[in-house]
Image (cartoon, rainbow, N blue to C red; front, side, top):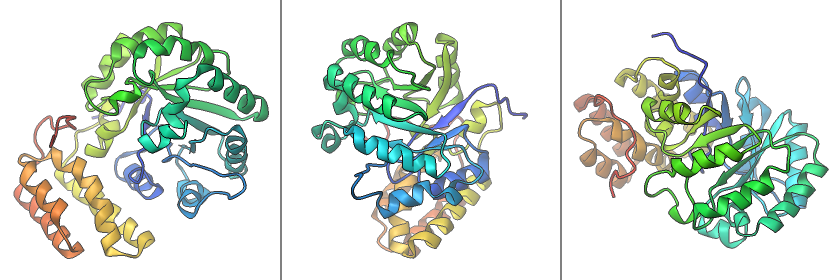
Length: 328
């Protein structure tokens, strides 16, 4: 089936999962997202980036892909330092994370913690937009505890030349539970003065099309858990073919090989692949037993034996996609 590139699709950042190795492998196997956002960089201007962060923004690791470094900090000086360092490496856009719901992040008034005080957020944005002349996009949530907080937050955001505003249609309190609040997203879209990107529960083609039909002002959809479950999801949203078992096998093998080249430790690779398989196993006809075995595997050889058996014994279920209720 011929792909339709009129639907713009972004790959969401997910800590430890959407690394440069994953991005390159997913793009090579299924076609690249219109943008990939890195797992967040948490810079300290007097200490620089750490080794993992540097690997994420090394230009040769992202060659041929449109990658946006995402910055997580509540200090304008640290944001400006990181943004300028990214620009020196050739990145045309940086993304400010004010939506991360992690308890340790929020307790430091970073991520979604910045939504608590719109006045402080305003002062932060004033400093970074006046101190950096490159493109800044923002990823946010609808508030800390209630979507009723968002009009005041959006009033602040509307004052600045934000390249794109990605809204994860949940409040911080919800984390990733329950259904995304698409109704509040629709209300926000009516008042936003910048291009909007929708994020939240886009698990299949139907989910993406429904958002675009209900909110035509949406510039792009961002996929996270849905893409982790089905790495061909962006291709499908664009009108391409559904995933085959052979494609998934090739993707998993290449991904594990890529991790082996960089991590040098089979145990570490197994740990990382377990995180990916938590999502991908949902594609198969009888996932529960295999998920448990994969999770409990102690050695890489044992883990790969279970993977081999899964591919040999199971098929990809028709219409399979990520389920937020899975394994709860």
